[in-house]
Amino acid sequence: MILEAKTISFRYDNGNRQILNQVSLSVGSGERVGLSAPSGFGKTTFCKILAGYERPDAGEVLLDGRPLGSYGPYCPVQMVWQHPELSVNPRRRMKTVLAEGDHIPERVIRGLGIEKDWENRFPGELSGGELQRFCIARALGERTRFLLADEISTMLDLITQSQIWNFLLEETAARGIGLLVVSHADGLLKQVCTRVERLDR
Amino acid sequence: MKIRNRRQRMAVLMAVSLFLLVLVTAAGWAFGETASATDFSRKNLAPCLSYPFGTDFMGRDMLLRTVAGLSSSIRLGILTAAVSAVIAFILGLAAAVLGKAADGVISGMIDLVMGIPHILLLILISYACGKGFWGVVVGISLTHWTSLARLIRGEVLQLKESNYVKIAARLGHGKLKVAFFHMTPHLLPQLVTGLVLMFPHAILHEASITFLGFGLPPEEPAIGIILSESMKYLVMGKWWLALFPGLLLAGVVLLFHFLGEGLLLLLDPENAHR
Image (cartoon, rainbow over all chains, first blue to last red; front, side, top):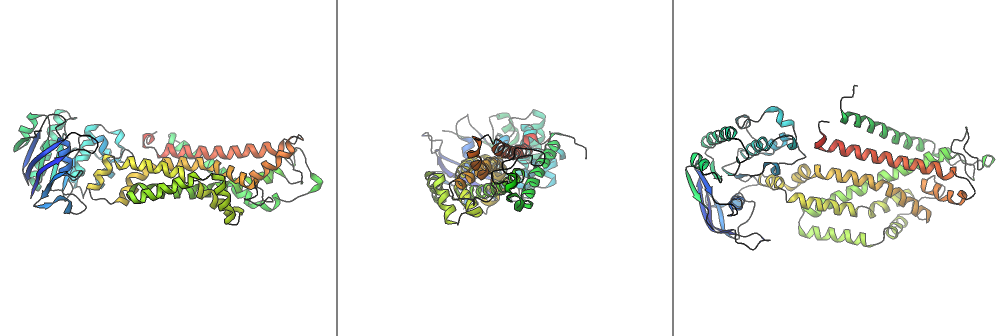
Protein backbone atom coordinates (compact mmCIF):
# COMPACT_ATOMS: atom_id res chain seq x y z
CA MET A 1 0.00 0.00 0.00
CA ILE A 2 1.06 3.55 -0.48
CA LEU A 3 0.08 6.67 1.41
CA GLU A 4 0.40 9.84 -0.62
CA ALA A 5 0.01 13.50 0.26
CA LYS A 6 -0.42 15.57 -2.88
CA THR A 7 0.35 19.32 -2.88
CA ILE A 8 -1.28 19.94 0.45
CA SER A 9 -1.92 23.49 1.65
CA PHE A 10 -3.41 24.36 4.99
CA ARG A 11 -4.10 27.28 7.26
CA TYR A 12 -6.04 27.24 10.52
CA ASP A 13 -9.34 29.13 10.68
CA ASN A 14 -8.17 31.37 13.52
CA GLY A 15 -4.64 32.18 12.35
CA ASN A 16 -3.76 33.96 9.18
CA ARG A 17 -0.40 32.32 8.62
CA GLN A 18 -0.13 29.71 5.89
CA ILE A 19 1.12 26.61 7.71
CA LEU A 20 1.56 24.16 4.84
CA ASN A 21 2.19 25.26 1.29
CA GLN A 22 2.03 22.67 -1.48
CA VAL A 23 3.58 19.86 0.52
CA SER A 24 3.87 16.45 -1.08
CA LEU A 25 5.10 13.21 0.43
CA SER A 26 4.61 9.52 -0.07
CA VAL A 27 5.18 6.59 2.23
CA GLY A 28 5.05 2.97 1.13
CA SER A 29 4.24 -0.10 3.21
CA GLY A 30 7.30 -1.29 5.01
CA GLU A 31 8.97 2.05 4.48
CA ARG A 32 10.09 4.16 7.44
CA VAL A 33 10.16 7.83 6.55
CA GLY A 34 11.56 10.46 8.87
CA LEU A 35 10.16 13.98 8.85
CA SER A 36 12.16 16.76 10.38
CA ALA A 37 11.62 20.49 10.57
CA PRO A 38 12.05 23.27 13.12
CA SER A 39 9.23 24.13 15.52
CA GLY A 40 6.19 25.76 14.00
CA PHE A 41 6.71 24.39 10.52
CA GLY A 42 3.54 22.33 10.66
CA LYS A 43 4.83 18.82 11.36
CA THR A 44 1.96 17.97 13.66
CA THR A 45 -0.56 19.66 11.38
CA PHE A 46 0.75 17.61 8.49
CA CYS A 47 0.30 14.40 10.51
CA LYS A 48 -3.23 15.44 11.46
CA ILE A 49 -4.09 15.89 7.81
CA LEU A 50 -2.52 12.57 6.84
CA ALA A 51 -4.52 10.76 9.53
CA GLY A 52 -7.76 12.51 8.63
CA TYR A 53 -8.11 14.77 11.67
CA GLU A 54 -8.09 17.90 9.52
CA ARG A 55 -9.10 18.54 5.92
CA PRO A 56 -6.53 20.32 3.75
CA ASP A 57 -7.54 23.59 2.05
CA ALA A 58 -6.00 22.31 -1.17
CA GLY A 59 -4.50 19.02 -2.26
CA GLU A 60 -5.52 15.54 -1.18
CA VAL A 61 -4.48 12.51 0.81
CA LEU A 62 -4.63 9.24 -1.09
CA LEU A 63 -4.28 5.71 0.17
CA ASP A 64 -3.61 3.36 -2.75
CA GLY A 65 -5.02 6.02 -5.05
CA ARG A 66 -8.32 6.30 -3.16
CA PRO A 67 -9.10 9.32 -0.97
CA LEU A 68 -8.51 8.57 2.71
CA GLY A 69 -12.09 9.56 3.58
CA SER A 70 -13.47 6.66 1.54
CA TYR A 71 -12.06 4.08 3.94
CA GLY A 72 -14.54 2.72 6.53
CA PRO A 73 -15.12 4.11 9.98
CA TYR A 74 -11.75 2.75 11.14
CA CYS A 75 -9.00 4.89 9.65
CA PRO A 76 -6.12 2.70 8.38
CA VAL A 77 -3.76 5.62 9.04
CA GLN A 78 -3.34 6.03 12.77
CA MET A 79 -1.48 8.78 14.54
CA VAL A 80 0.21 8.70 17.91
CA TRP A 81 0.16 12.14 19.47
CA GLN A 82 2.94 14.02 21.13
CA HIS A 83 1.06 14.47 24.42
CA PRO A 84 -0.15 11.13 25.80
CA GLU A 85 -1.79 12.75 28.82
CA LEU A 86 -4.18 14.62 26.49
CA SER A 87 -4.82 11.57 24.35
CA VAL A 88 -6.52 9.44 26.98
CA ASN A 89 -9.73 10.17 28.85
CA PRO A 90 -8.78 11.10 32.45
CA ARG A 91 -11.97 9.54 33.77
CA ARG A 92 -11.59 6.08 32.30
CA ARG A 93 -9.29 3.24 33.31
CA MET A 94 -6.35 2.33 31.10
CA LYS A 95 -7.80 -1.00 30.03
CA THR A 96 -10.52 0.91 28.20
CA VAL A 97 -7.80 2.63 26.16
CA LEU A 98 -6.63 -0.76 24.90
CA ALA A 99 -10.21 -1.89 24.33
CA GLU A 100 -10.79 1.18 22.17
CA GLY A 101 -8.26 0.01 19.61
CA ASP A 102 -8.97 -2.56 16.95
CA HIS A 103 -8.28 -5.95 18.61
CA ILE A 104 -4.87 -5.13 20.04
CA PRO A 105 -2.86 -8.37 20.23
CA GLU A 106 -1.41 -9.38 23.59
CA ARG A 107 2.01 -9.50 21.89
CA VAL A 108 1.87 -5.74 21.23
CA ILE A 109 0.84 -4.93 24.80
CA ARG A 110 3.64 -7.00 26.31
CA GLY A 111 6.14 -5.91 23.67
CA LEU A 112 5.66 -2.28 24.66
CA GLY A 113 6.37 -3.16 28.29
CA ILE A 114 2.85 -2.47 29.60
CA GLU A 115 2.46 -4.15 32.97
CA LYS A 116 -0.73 -5.98 33.84
CA ASP A 117 -1.45 -3.86 36.91
CA TRP A 118 -1.27 -0.57 34.99
CA GLU A 119 -4.41 -1.55 33.12
CA ASN A 120 -6.59 -1.04 36.18
CA ARG A 121 -5.28 2.44 36.89
CA PHE A 122 -6.54 5.83 35.84
CA PRO A 123 -4.38 8.04 33.57
CA GLY A 124 -3.52 10.33 36.48
CA GLU A 125 -1.76 7.45 38.16
CA LEU A 126 0.72 6.75 35.37
CA SER A 127 3.71 8.70 34.06
CA GLY A 128 3.82 10.24 30.60
CA GLY A 129 6.06 7.48 29.30
CA GLU A 130 3.79 4.78 30.64
CA LEU A 131 0.75 6.48 29.11
CA GLN A 132 2.51 6.79 25.77
CA ARG A 133 2.93 3.01 25.56
CA PHE A 134 -0.83 2.64 25.84
CA CYS A 135 -1.35 5.21 23.11
CA ILE A 136 1.08 3.40 20.81
CA ALA A 137 -0.59 0.09 21.51
CA ARG A 138 -4.03 1.56 20.82
CA ALA A 139 -2.88 2.77 17.40
CA LEU A 140 -1.55 -0.67 16.42
CA GLY A 141 -4.93 -2.29 15.82
CA GLU A 142 -5.50 -5.04 13.26
CA ARG A 143 -6.61 -2.72 10.47
CA THR A 144 -3.81 -0.18 10.90
CA ARG A 145 -1.70 0.10 7.72
CA PHE A 146 0.25 3.26 8.43
CA LEU A 147 1.48 4.66 11.72
CA LEU A 148 2.34 8.32 12.19
CA ALA A 149 4.61 8.85 15.16
CA ASP A 150 4.58 12.52 16.13
CA GLU A 151 7.41 13.03 18.61
CA ILE A 152 6.30 9.93 20.48
CA SER A 153 9.49 9.33 22.41
CA THR A 154 10.60 12.81 23.47
CA MET A 155 9.42 12.27 27.03
CA LEU A 156 11.17 8.95 27.49
CA ASP A 157 14.60 8.05 28.85
CA LEU A 158 17.06 6.49 26.41
CA ILE A 159 16.63 2.90 27.57
CA THR A 160 12.84 3.06 27.24
CA GLN A 161 13.17 4.84 23.90
CA SER A 162 15.30 2.04 22.51
CA GLN A 163 12.95 -0.60 23.91
CA ILE A 164 9.94 1.02 22.26
CA TRP A 165 11.63 1.73 18.94
CA ASN A 166 13.06 -1.78 18.71
CA PHE A 167 9.62 -3.18 19.25
CA LEU A 168 8.04 -0.78 16.74
CA LEU A 169 10.59 -1.59 14.05
CA GLU A 170 10.04 -5.30 14.56
CA GLU A 171 6.25 -5.02 14.60
CA THR A 172 5.92 -2.71 11.59
CA ALA A 173 8.34 -4.83 9.58
CA ALA A 174 6.46 -8.03 10.41
CA ARG A 175 3.07 -6.56 9.51
CA GLY A 176 4.19 -4.37 6.63
CA ILE A 177 3.02 -1.19 8.34
CA GLY A 178 4.38 2.02 6.87
CA LEU A 179 5.90 4.40 9.40
CA LEU A 180 6.23 8.16 9.39
CA VAL A 181 8.50 9.37 12.17
CA VAL A 182 8.40 13.02 13.17
CA SER A 183 11.18 14.22 15.41
CA HIS A 184 13.65 16.97 16.17
CA ALA A 185 16.25 14.36 17.02
CA ASP A 186 18.23 13.78 13.82
CA GLY A 187 20.15 10.96 15.51
CA LEU A 188 16.94 9.05 16.09
CA LEU A 189 15.73 9.58 12.53
CA LYS A 190 19.06 8.41 11.12
CA GLN A 191 18.91 5.31 13.28
CA VAL A 192 15.28 4.38 12.66
CA CYS A 193 14.32 5.55 9.18
CA THR A 194 15.00 4.36 5.68
CA ARG A 195 14.93 7.95 4.43
CA VAL A 196 14.52 11.40 5.92
CA GLU A 197 12.50 14.26 4.46
CA ARG A 198 12.67 17.90 5.47
CA LEU A 199 9.59 20.06 5.65
CA ASP A 200 10.23 23.51 4.18
CA ARG A 201 8.08 26.54 4.43
CA MET B 1 -17.90 -5.83 57.24
CA LYS B 2 -14.71 -4.05 58.12
CA ILE B 3 -14.32 -0.52 56.85
CA ARG B 4 -10.97 -0.14 55.18
CA ASN B 5 -10.86 3.25 53.50
CA ARG B 6 -12.58 6.59 52.99
CA ARG B 7 -14.60 5.42 50.02
CA GLN B 8 -16.17 2.61 51.98
CA ARG B 9 -16.89 4.86 54.96
CA MET B 10 -18.53 7.33 52.59
CA ALA B 11 -20.57 4.54 51.04
CA VAL B 12 -21.81 3.43 54.46
CA LEU B 13 -22.75 6.98 55.47
CA MET B 14 -24.55 7.45 52.18
CA ALA B 15 -26.47 4.23 52.72
CA VAL B 16 -27.52 5.48 56.16
CA SER B 17 -28.77 8.82 54.83
CA LEU B 18 -30.54 7.09 51.98
CA PHE B 19 -32.20 4.80 54.53
CA LEU B 20 -33.35 7.82 56.57
CA LEU B 21 -34.87 9.45 53.50
CA VAL B 22 -36.62 6.25 52.49
CA LEU B 23 -37.89 5.81 56.04
CA VAL B 24 -39.40 9.31 56.12
CA THR B 25 -40.96 8.81 52.70
CA ALA B 26 -42.47 5.47 53.63
CA ALA B 27 -43.70 6.69 57.02
CA GLY B 28 -45.39 9.67 55.41
CA TRP B 29 -47.07 7.38 52.93
CA ALA B 30 -48.30 5.04 55.66
CA PHE B 31 -49.56 7.76 58.05
CA GLY B 32 -51.01 10.00 55.35
CA GLU B 33 -54.58 9.43 56.56
CA THR B 34 -53.91 9.88 60.29
CA ALA B 35 -51.88 12.98 59.56
CA SER B 36 -54.92 14.92 58.41
CA ALA B 37 -57.20 13.70 61.20
CA THR B 38 -58.60 16.69 63.05
CA ASP B 39 -59.52 16.68 66.75
CA PHE B 40 -60.75 19.96 68.19
CA SER B 41 -60.26 18.76 71.78
CA ARG B 42 -56.49 19.07 71.32
CA LYS B 43 -56.22 22.42 69.52
CA ASN B 44 -52.99 24.46 69.64
CA LEU B 45 -51.11 22.29 72.12
CA ALA B 46 -47.46 23.21 72.71
CA PRO B 47 -44.97 20.36 72.28
CA CYS B 48 -45.44 17.78 75.04
CA LEU B 49 -44.74 14.07 75.51
CA SER B 50 -47.70 12.74 73.58
CA TYR B 51 -47.41 15.39 70.83
CA PRO B 52 -43.64 16.08 70.52
CA PHE B 53 -44.17 18.66 67.72
CA GLY B 54 -47.41 20.08 69.24
CA THR B 55 -50.74 20.38 67.44
CA ASP B 56 -52.17 23.06 65.16
CA PHE B 57 -55.34 25.17 65.10
CA MET B 58 -57.40 22.21 63.90
CA GLY B 59 -55.95 19.81 66.42
CA ARG B 60 -53.84 17.89 63.94
CA ASP B 61 -50.73 16.14 65.22
CA MET B 62 -47.83 18.18 63.87
CA LEU B 63 -45.32 15.31 64.05
CA LEU B 64 -47.41 13.17 61.72
CA ARG B 65 -48.22 16.12 59.52
CA THR B 66 -44.57 17.09 59.22
CA VAL B 67 -43.51 13.56 58.31
CA ALA B 68 -46.32 13.25 55.79
CA GLY B 69 -45.41 16.65 54.35
CA LEU B 70 -41.73 15.78 54.10
CA SER B 71 -42.68 12.53 52.43
CA SER B 72 -44.69 14.22 49.70
CA SER B 73 -42.00 16.88 49.31
CA ILE B 74 -39.31 14.23 48.90
CA ARG B 75 -41.34 12.32 46.34
CA LEU B 76 -42.09 15.49 44.43
CA GLY B 77 -38.52 16.74 44.69
CA ILE B 78 -36.97 13.50 43.48
CA LEU B 79 -39.41 13.13 40.65
CA THR B 80 -39.06 16.67 39.31
CA ALA B 81 -35.30 16.81 39.79
CA ALA B 82 -34.88 13.48 38.01
CA VAL B 83 -37.19 14.36 35.13
CA SER B 84 -35.63 17.75 34.52
CA ALA B 85 -32.09 16.36 34.83
CA VAL B 86 -32.89 13.72 32.22
CA ILE B 87 -34.39 16.34 29.88
CA ALA B 88 -31.35 18.55 30.41
CA PHE B 89 -28.94 15.68 29.79
CA ILE B 90 -30.57 14.50 26.57
CA LEU B 91 -31.10 17.96 25.11
CA GLY B 92 -27.68 19.23 26.17
CA LEU B 93 -25.97 16.23 24.63
CA ALA B 94 -28.11 16.38 21.50
CA ALA B 95 -27.45 20.09 21.01
CA ALA B 96 -23.73 19.55 21.13
CA VAL B 97 -23.49 16.30 19.20
CA LEU B 98 -26.16 16.44 16.49
CA GLY B 99 -24.81 19.41 14.60
CA LYS B 100 -25.60 23.05 13.95
CA ALA B 101 -29.32 22.86 13.11
CA ALA B 102 -30.23 20.83 16.19
CA ASP B 103 -28.06 23.08 18.31
CA GLY B 104 -29.90 26.14 17.01
CA VAL B 105 -33.32 24.69 17.79
CA ILE B 106 -32.38 23.51 21.28
CA SER B 107 -30.52 26.69 22.19
CA GLY B 108 -33.56 28.61 21.04
CA MET B 109 -35.78 26.49 23.26
CA ILE B 110 -33.50 27.11 26.23
CA ASP B 111 -33.60 30.86 25.65
CA LEU B 112 -37.36 30.78 25.22
CA VAL B 113 -38.04 28.93 28.46
CA MET B 114 -35.48 31.01 30.32
CA GLY B 115 -36.96 34.22 28.94
CA ILE B 116 -40.40 33.63 30.48
CA PRO B 117 -40.59 34.15 34.24
CA HIS B 118 -40.44 30.78 35.99
CA ILE B 119 -43.40 31.22 38.22
CA LEU B 120 -45.70 32.33 35.41
CA LEU B 121 -44.86 29.35 33.22
CA LEU B 122 -45.09 27.08 36.22
CA ILE B 123 -48.59 28.30 37.09
CA LEU B 124 -49.77 27.98 33.51
CA ILE B 125 -48.45 24.45 33.06
CA SER B 126 -49.63 23.28 36.46
CA TYR B 127 -53.09 24.78 35.84
CA ALA B 128 -53.28 23.23 32.38
CA CYS B 129 -52.42 19.82 33.84
CA GLY B 130 -55.23 20.09 36.36
CA LYS B 131 -53.17 21.23 39.34
CA GLY B 132 -52.52 18.69 42.09
CA PHE B 133 -49.40 16.59 42.53
CA TRP B 134 -48.88 15.77 38.85
CA GLY B 135 -49.55 19.29 37.70
CA VAL B 136 -46.81 20.53 40.00
CA VAL B 137 -44.40 17.78 38.90
CA VAL B 138 -44.90 18.50 35.20
CA GLY B 139 -44.76 22.26 35.75
CA ILE B 140 -41.52 22.24 37.71
CA SER B 141 -39.84 19.65 35.48
CA LEU B 142 -40.61 21.57 32.31
CA THR B 143 -39.29 24.86 33.67
CA HIS B 144 -36.11 23.73 35.42
CA TRP B 145 -34.06 21.85 32.87
CA THR B 146 -32.72 24.93 31.08
CA SER B 147 -29.69 25.98 33.10
CA LEU B 148 -28.47 22.41 33.47
CA ALA B 149 -28.97 21.78 29.74
CA ARG B 150 -26.92 24.86 28.96
CA LEU B 151 -24.18 23.71 31.34
CA ILE B 152 -24.06 20.25 29.77
CA ARG B 153 -24.07 21.64 26.25
CA GLY B 154 -21.06 23.80 27.09
CA GLU B 155 -19.21 20.90 28.65
CA VAL B 156 -19.90 18.65 25.64
CA LEU B 157 -18.70 21.34 23.22
CA GLN B 158 -15.46 21.44 25.17
CA LEU B 159 -15.13 17.65 25.28
CA LYS B 160 -15.69 17.46 21.53
CA GLU B 161 -12.46 19.39 21.04
CA SER B 162 -10.38 17.11 23.24
CA ASN B 163 -7.82 14.83 21.65
CA TYR B 164 -9.21 11.60 23.03
CA VAL B 165 -12.65 12.23 21.54
CA LYS B 166 -11.10 12.98 18.15
CA ILE B 167 -8.92 9.89 18.41
CA ALA B 168 -11.95 7.74 19.24
CA ALA B 169 -13.61 9.00 16.04
CA ARG B 170 -10.57 8.01 13.96
CA LEU B 171 -10.64 4.60 15.63
CA GLY B 172 -14.06 4.17 14.09
CA HIS B 173 -16.28 4.70 17.12
CA GLY B 174 -19.68 6.23 16.41
CA LYS B 175 -21.03 9.41 17.94
CA LEU B 176 -23.39 7.61 20.32
CA LYS B 177 -20.64 5.38 21.61
CA VAL B 178 -18.32 8.33 22.14
CA ALA B 179 -21.08 10.28 23.87
CA PHE B 180 -21.80 7.39 26.19
CA PHE B 181 -18.30 6.18 27.00
CA HIS B 182 -16.21 9.33 26.71
CA MET B 183 -18.55 12.17 27.60
CA THR B 184 -20.95 10.74 30.17
CA PRO B 185 -18.23 10.13 32.80
CA HIS B 186 -17.42 13.86 32.63
CA LEU B 187 -21.08 14.91 32.70
CA LEU B 188 -22.22 12.72 35.60
CA PRO B 189 -20.78 14.97 38.34
CA GLN B 190 -22.50 17.99 36.74
CA LEU B 191 -25.71 16.04 36.51
CA VAL B 192 -25.57 14.85 40.11
CA THR B 193 -24.84 18.34 41.40
CA GLY B 194 -27.59 19.75 39.26
CA LEU B 195 -30.01 17.14 40.56
CA VAL B 196 -29.18 17.86 44.18
CA LEU B 197 -29.44 21.62 43.69
CA MET B 198 -32.75 21.17 41.90
CA PHE B 199 -34.30 19.38 44.87
CA PRO B 200 -34.67 22.30 47.35
CA HIS B 201 -35.62 24.51 44.42
CA ALA B 202 -38.45 22.16 43.47
CA ILE B 203 -39.80 22.03 47.03
CA LEU B 204 -39.73 25.81 47.35
CA HIS B 205 -41.53 26.22 44.04
CA GLU B 206 -44.07 23.65 45.07
CA ALA B 207 -44.68 25.62 48.27
CA SER B 208 -44.98 28.93 46.45
CA ILE B 209 -47.47 27.83 43.81
CA THR B 210 -49.41 25.89 46.40
CA PHE B 211 -49.57 29.11 48.42
CA LEU B 212 -50.93 30.91 45.35
CA GLY B 213 -53.60 28.24 44.96
CA PHE B 214 -52.36 26.61 41.77
CA GLY B 215 -50.56 23.66 43.30
CA LEU B 216 -51.43 20.97 45.79
CA PRO B 217 -54.89 21.08 47.42
CA PRO B 218 -54.73 22.78 50.84
CA GLU B 219 -55.85 19.72 52.78
CA GLU B 220 -52.76 17.84 51.68
CA PRO B 221 -50.00 17.92 54.31
CA ALA B 222 -47.21 19.57 52.31
CA ILE B 223 -44.37 21.42 54.01
CA GLY B 224 -45.11 24.47 51.89
CA ILE B 225 -48.69 24.55 53.13
CA ILE B 226 -47.68 23.93 56.75
CA LEU B 227 -45.19 26.79 56.64
CA SER B 228 -47.51 29.28 55.00
CA GLU B 229 -50.33 28.40 57.41
CA SER B 230 -48.04 28.77 60.40
CA MET B 231 -47.25 32.37 59.41
CA LYS B 232 -50.61 33.51 60.79
CA TYR B 233 -49.98 31.81 64.12
CA LEU B 234 -46.34 32.78 64.65
CA VAL B 235 -47.23 36.22 66.01
CA MET B 236 -49.52 34.52 68.51
CA GLY B 237 -46.51 32.73 69.96
CA LYS B 238 -47.16 29.33 68.35
CA TRP B 239 -43.51 28.83 67.43
CA TRP B 240 -43.69 25.04 67.12
CA LEU B 241 -45.87 25.21 64.01
CA ALA B 242 -42.99 26.52 61.91
CA LEU B 243 -39.87 25.51 63.82
CA PHE B 244 -39.99 21.71 63.57
CA PRO B 245 -41.25 21.41 59.98
CA GLY B 246 -38.71 24.05 58.92
CA LEU B 247 -35.84 22.32 60.70
CA LEU B 248 -36.73 18.93 59.31
CA LEU B 249 -37.05 20.35 55.81
CA ALA B 250 -33.56 21.81 56.17
CA GLY B 251 -32.40 18.43 57.46
CA VAL B 252 -33.80 16.58 54.46
CA VAL B 253 -32.19 19.08 52.08
CA LEU B 254 -28.88 18.59 53.89
CA LEU B 255 -29.16 14.82 53.60
CA PHE B 256 -29.67 15.16 49.85
CA HIS B 257 -26.74 17.52 49.65
CA PHE B 258 -24.59 15.00 51.51
CA LEU B 259 -25.68 12.25 49.15
CA GLY B 260 -24.72 14.41 46.19
CA GLU B 261 -21.31 15.24 47.63
CA GLY B 262 -20.70 11.59 48.42
CA LEU B 263 -21.57 10.54 44.89
CA LEU B 264 -19.21 13.17 43.51
CA LEU B 265 -16.43 11.79 45.69
CA LEU B 266 -17.08 8.23 44.60
CA LEU B 267 -17.33 9.15 40.90
CA ASP B 268 -14.08 11.08 40.72
CA PRO B 269 -11.11 8.91 39.70
CA GLU B 270 -8.84 11.28 41.65
CA ASN B 271 -10.19 9.51 44.72
CA ALA B 272 -10.26 5.99 43.34
CA HIS B 273 -7.81 4.65 45.89
CA ARG B 274 -8.63 6.57 49.06
